[in-house]
Amino acid sequence: SEILPRVCLALASERLRRVACGAGFTLVLTANGAVLTCGDGEVLGHGKSLDCNVPRPVEALRGQAIIKIACGERHAAVLTADGKLFAWGNSFDGQLGRTGLYSSPISVSFTDVHEAASAAFDPSCKKGISSVETAIGDTRETEEGMQNRS
Picture 1 (spheres, rainbow, N blue to C red):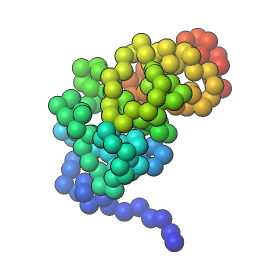
Picture 2: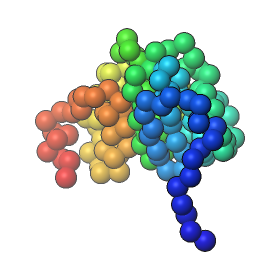
Picture 3: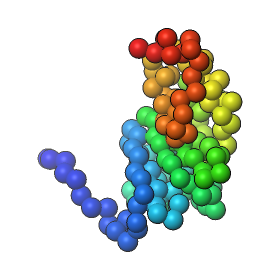
Picture 4: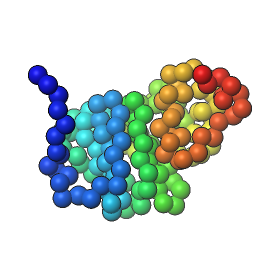
């Protein structure tokens, strides 16, 4: 069987600003600033680990003016218009500035992100932190971190 692109009818009436994909899940940012997710339930931000085939709003972000979205392999991050960073998903290697699995968005300080990036010298962890760096639009890495990145 062949895999072909197809229209997501659930989003046909939405104006979309951005789309980001991880391993088995998708984030969508609508023109009105809502974040919707679908795919593997572990990283959707809905607070439960239930798979979702139709894009559904991340309720914990309702009322936030989201301007950027990003995905890592098994985690996601969003940036608000007033500079707040929220993230969720697999952070076992410290991708979100702390370790664990977060099924709902958590507030992440830029200090947390900087410390995680500074400590993340192995390639798999650097790959993981990239979604947060992309979401904030600024790779706040130490000189040592840049030298170890190859």
